[in-house]
Length: 285
Image (cartoon, rainbow, N blue to C red; front, side, top):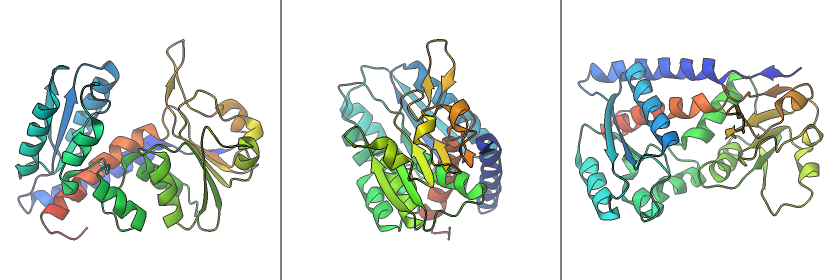
């Protein structure tokens, strides 16, 4: 049976580390601050925003919350982002996605000061991720790296397959694994012989967003399986991309859903906010 990689425990340890860093900054009269903007009333987004507020409290980070009506114009949103860019009390700015259809996500992302871009979606930060020089890393892929490290797994020289090529997870995930000297294959909806490619993986990371997409016949015995997917089933229960019960006996290590990658995303957001505060105050990170 595979080792279960406990995201709740690892995320709690990261939040504790972040709280210590925030406390050290407060001794220098710096309190890290995170501004979260929610446009509209999407229920899932509201839950995420509330979870971020709670994490800020735990970590000693000041929380600024902006709930805007769904009819807010793009110009109004960009004006708010511009004001937050200039506010020295705000070190991180996060606009909860998705935004309403009449607002262009790229325009929103591009408007955020790259030094305050705690999602690490701005083109400047994406470029640095490609180069391997980024101080702010996308939260979910960075959380995956922390989980892999926590299990004592060294990606160097290993074959890694990433299923999914989104800008939020798949592409930056592949970059971070390459920077750790893994040999990376990105698979997606047009990939041929997907099962055969996955069976070559020493580390398999799925971010495709389809319930039970990864089945036992896709797993190399002893492989590390990281399940980024969070899907809600008809009965209301959460499940991942990976058919956990069937895959766990074959894998060497595996993340559960819930309780695996999910808690890591917010923990790494807290880390990015403290890192941004240090960068903006010219403090070594």
